[in-house]
Image (cartoon, rainbow, N blue to C red):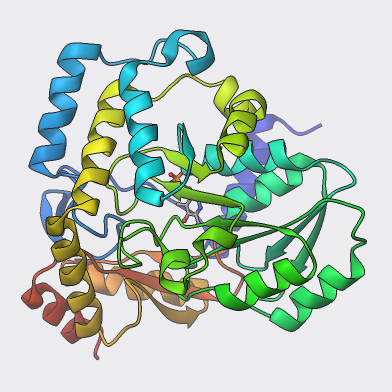
Amino acid sequence: MPNLNDHLGADLAQLRADGLYRQLRTLASAQGARIVIDGREFLNFSSNDYLGLANDPVLKRTARTATQRWGVGGGASRLVCGNLAPYEELERKLAAFKGKEAAIVFSSGYAANIGTITALVEEGDIVILDKLDHASIIDGARQSGATIRVYPHKNLKKLEDLLKQSGKSRRRIIITETIFSMDGDAAPLAEIVALKEKYSAWLMLDEAHATGIFGANRRGLAETTGVENKVDVTLGTLSKALGCVGGFVAGSQTLIDYLRNRARSLIYSTALPPSVCAAATAAVDFVMSEAGAGRRDKLWENVQAMEAKNPIIPIIIGDERVAVERSRQLYDKGIFVPAIRYPTVPKNKARLRVTVSAAHSAEDIQQLNECIGR
Ligand SMILES: *Cc1c(COP(=O)(O)O)cnc(C)c1O
């Protein structure tokens, strides 16, 4: 048997040779349109902080006040003694925001997907996924023990075939992202809902990248599409447009009671700190307000200035090494755009993933456009 470090070292050398080696970059500034790395300022087009809330003064003040009152740590799982009052307030706020009976908060969007999917289905059931669904959905589906069926990205014909093939006697759940995290395109929700109804399957939506920025009330793409009351399970994150950290599920009171009893990533994990819950509550308040509508409009102005449809703008390069090189060239010009590579996206589909935020000025967008040669 090889020595552990020799074994791992060989794997890492291969990753380097394939242009797939990953490194952390350390920011010496808060998250925002401008960030500091290695003592240099960069224009940041890489974060999911679409509304510029991650370093918002009101949210920071709210978190500070909550820390003074409630301390820094949750102390235990929520089912033991970690369920401090800011949690309840956040869940009530999220339910109201999403227009659902109830909501439940997890320590991350990742934990929300894992806990929810493993609670809802098990061996003998069928999970039907879009090929480009997020890793946390795939991992949840795998852990559940259910049979996994995958349709090519947004391919409704294949989705219908899978629904036809899987017997009605078993539980079947379709799970899709609404705005896809690495491609920025939208799932055909109206059509998926029609199929879910026709074949009486359940539908779970991951609105991670749509929450806070899509829909008249910023509730997500299901709102834009007018299908909210046809969706069985709605998942969102507090970590993207809401600028904080955490994940949540909104739905019927029965669903939420069930998850509280069955979702292992909730039951066996320490509660989020109260400061985060308080800040997230303030973030939802902001998103629901007139000011939130205005900030969302600013985001879409920036998206239009990029001649894009959504805030996530992938520039597909293909080869991993070339993508890394392009990212480095932008870095040299003071623009931070990451190269996204396998396994986050398929092999030979490496890309620069540009994300724009309401925090960018028109000049920022113009500078990016010039640097990427648009
Ligand atoms: C980011 C993301 C998650 C995970 O959310 P975190 O809060 O970052 O853990 C889940 N689903 C999708 C589609 C995402 O983009």
